[in-house]
Length: 216
Image (tube, rainbow, N blue to C red; front, side):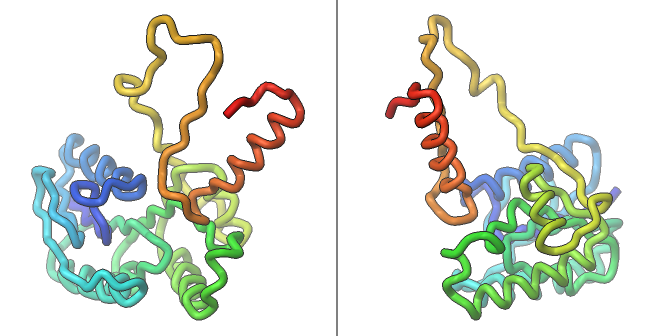
């Protein structure tokens, strides 16, 4: 099957979770023998056709322009389906004619007071997301939380959502021999509203208060 993947940012240059997720998805589809063509603002080291789409690194404007140009470059490629890595304000799905699959990592903007401070940006993000989820054939999410929030805030039917967890590389992350009995919790990632750090901090405080066994 010939599949196009549109992702504004790509793992080879952007070391983020959303970028790594879509990169590994592309890699897995290539390994399974599918004909994959990828579109991104960054380069790719995968053995498939890749088209770099330049846009200015300006919030909202850059996303909108990439969405438009990425969809235009796809014209005439005769693909069976398109996968769009949906950061909050991507609009590529809205310019596509055939079947499309969205990969939505989170919709934290609906519950984050910080994300809602810029009212104009928040308004357009909501409009874009609502239209994108309506048009998509399927929506891939990495967590049950994102699935629940899509149902709650955007009325997405559950049968439209497919849960594909990010998983853990057990060759990289595994207990060492002689590991002390005290458990350690590791959290990595930039501190931003959509990362859910406030939930983690609240959980730490609840655990410490109820058990007295959490130490910094």
